[in-house]
Length: 512
Image (cartoon, rainbow, N blue to C red; front, side, top):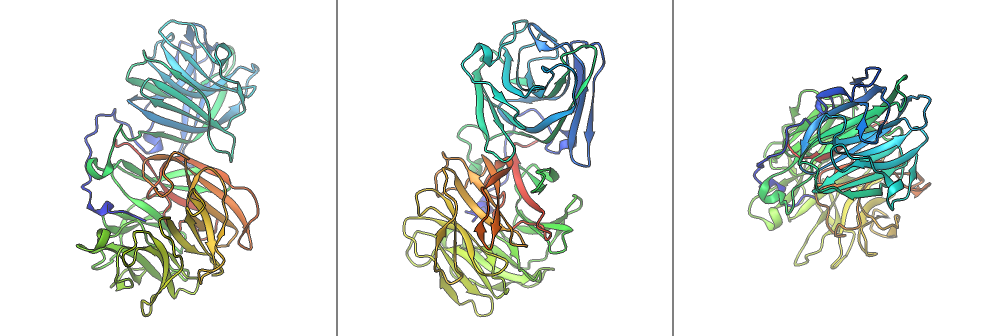
């Protein structure tokens, strides 16, 4: 559901250091630090948007360092996340790869790092001042962690927070340090060190994202929006690719039926882009030209539903229309507002949506015939919230999210509204369940516990989760498949590829 985003002027005063949201432009500098005996190098791999860093170096320790560094200069707060592993190992168990935030290129510069060692030791390490001896949790109170495949290092003012995760698990805090002497502008990037000056090792880094969060008390409705990235991901190997980035807002991808393009909303219009990136094409939606992020394609691939705002009506006037997928004249389905589309019935005859009707201030789930617009109310909630209704491909269930049990969780019900059943039970706030075309998988968005249960804001640390299904029932535990900065507009609507192997979503970051 999209709340009045169409009203906002898209502008933002940006004082951040310039960097690109596209992976191939993220790190413009690569060099050896500290004159290691064997020169290092870095390579960007465009086919999977990964990086390899080959390096020697005696160590990153004591009062000076030797390693190879791939980096940019970043100002202010940021969140840096990557998958990582050793591509080529050496003889020393203390060989290192990871994320480094550094005051300068000098070999004795102050820095803080997220470090994965060859023996699996995963820690935060830091040098508080230029020329000082290095510190790590063996000197402090933090427990040592092992063999993390995902690391995230966040700067929040003077505080530096290291999170880590094993594949499929939520990020957990490994350690944090307050370092008040760190400059506002830091060299920020990836590193590799062999811990043996006579040999080289190689680190591999993928799903690398450098996100600039909102500033304190940031309000997108008055200050404009952060930038967006369109991403695709193989849900089985977790590999992500950025195919389009913009300094302003776009949202909510749907995969086109032919598997070759992705559909999304931007600036009130509906656009498509090739799945590998390229030129945008605008779909002719006629008078429905003020569309939000609630749109999607019928199961037979012939029709498109959009949620277009009509001026002067209740809560922005979001109204559902349907039209041919190739474009054409939109047909009004819901006269009353607000109405936010979320799914098609499997027989392509109905749409399911969330709406307010009458005097109630609560959203409920409805379905409506595209033939005669007859509405049927499916939930009857007061003072609670439901959202994101979507039919399963076999038509047996409508999946949705609701906070009737106290937190926002995934639910399902029969198409007539009967047999409502809660499916997830955890401390997170879970939104927008989407079922794969083959009916075997569900993906959904998880907000952290500190987000209000009925809110789904933009610009938050969120996770995408995947769970196997068997005849509509959970056939395994949910696992995390993506760690990102996003929320509203990330995955509001069905975004599976036709082959049930990939999803598309939108992540956020500060502007270039």
